[in-house]
Image 1 (cartoon, helix red, strand yellow):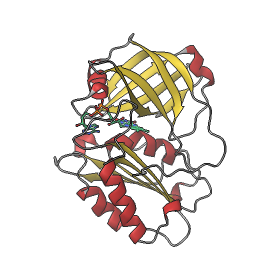
Image 2 (cartoon, helix red, strand yellow):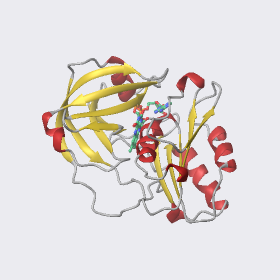
Image 3 (cartoon, rainbow, N blue to C red):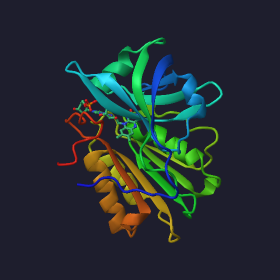
Image 4 (cartoon, rainbow, N blue to C red):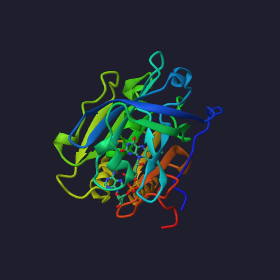
Length: 252
Ligand SMILES: Cc1cc2nc3c(=O)[nH]c(=O)nc-3n(C[C@H](O)[C@H](O)[C@H](O)COP(=O)(O)OP(=O)(O)OC[C@H]3O[C@@H](n4cnc5c(N)ncnc54)[C@H](O)[C@@H]3O)c2cc1C
């Protein structure tokens, strides 16, 4: 299965390796933990909105990679912010629960990822679950014409819905799964089925649970979007840990 459809407008920045320090840890919503990381070398970080950091974290059996989207960067301070879903188990979720200011993270790779915004698209539809909120908000707020931007995000309940960024004047709609399990495709599929798809050539960005993103892609394709109008990325797979390289197993 290829869940990665890419848009390349210009060469992407070359990934570099950083040793980072945790500067602050704050609960942004009931499930999203905002973590700010710092290193002097981040002052000249080059990245595209939608790209991510790859952290090396202890799994109890050695180090594994886990990827988190760059939500915001403060270049003068050498800081980068990530928002991590506290879903319970796994090296990434355990790290987010336990980390405190002062922790050092070695050999962090940034920027990773190939999906970024297509500034030439007539409209932009961003679709994802909680794990995709950082990517969708950052990409959406980077666009100059908010009238062309729609964001559809699945959250567990109302307490999990973060305030949309002030710079994002497009439409943000939260799909509430009302306590249902994350990664079941129903709520997001229903929202995608209702989403307005103007006839002009737009672009859809889809990220989140592996089976869900493919189901949403197939639905939008049935509704008339072509594959090259969609940037699709599997971030995690329900009931299965990501591979040590930080992505869900594509073999399923
Ligand atoms: C390019 C990229 C960017 C990403 N950006 C972000 C981001 O900004 N913020 C973010 O929070 N995540 C993001 N993710 C997703 C995150 O890397 C995965 O959720 C990852 O599985 C977390 O690792 P873990 O060690 O916590 O759990 P794993 O060891 O991978 O999995 C352990 C168990 O937890 C389950 N699980 C994993 N993730 C979730 C979840 N979100 N909800 C419920 N159950 C889950 C698995 O199905 C498995 O049963 C991104 C992934 C990619 C590939």
